Length: 403
Image 1: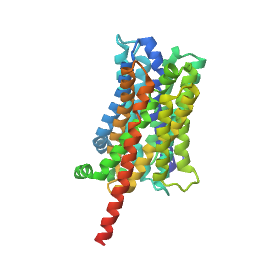
Image 2: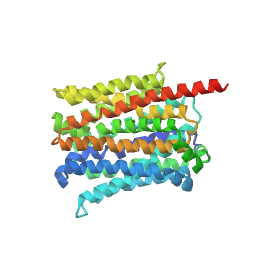
Image 3: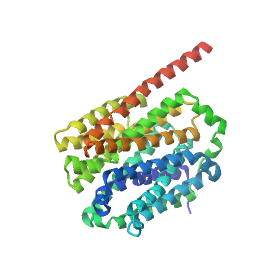
Image 4: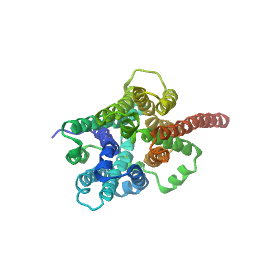
């Protein structure tokens, strides 16, 4: 048996992000099917999305004591095991229970808990592994979420086209193999000694009293809300509002979104450019605002499709970019900070889709009105980005005065 290295560890962490993409983005492809098969209305579908991210939120909140109790390896194994159980439950329980929606909620709770723990475990592991550029490494790690999104969307769409969406349960069972495979990988890969870096409880409260932390927290909230606000509803938006067929709606909308997100993250990670993370984010915020306006007011389906791709490329850097900026700007930047930022980011992931779903429901299912309200999130992010620069300049000034 060959000796495993940190390269294998990074690969396992990247593959974990593929699994998180599956956890977040597979079930929304089934929303139209759930509406017809189980007579689930739009508000109930909003509930599935909300529960998904609320459970991830709870997993983030409990991650530090869980990691203290189990260690990083066992927490990673638990995360993947919960993902396996969740997809098994999704495939089996709805047709065996009198209330299929309750079964869907139960399955969502299981795989969402796994997805929440995956992020909290993988980010500090990769951050603790020696590398030349942590900003780029973080962007590469998060790009695998995007490519996982692409893979899940393409494979699901091909399956539905060839075999039929009526047989979605068999595909759901097949997805169980991915977290099962990566669970086995995490048994053997070497881990850096990150568990010793988990801060004592006193540092938790010190972190919460820092103004800088709350600036990054608001950025993370806005990043999560922006990213998930559209991605969770994109398939439904492309089919019912824009007017594409199921096959085109699944492939054209979510796929263009995911591909552009992956390209943006991969380009920042591997590309030969001299842009700082801050400059890259500024460009992306402008493009994000433009894409929201286009999708909200576009008179033609293909312009809406192009705008969804632009949205994906623009929003892709916000989440890993916030991690990178926070790592630079915070002295307490260990697992505690990653856990809290993930917690607040997942709160944004919950509120973004919820806001769009509620507004669309209020306007008789008009998703264009829902998408328009998501302009709020890049605005908050931009204001906080300015605040980080002001805070950093003030800190530098105080250092010079002290010298």
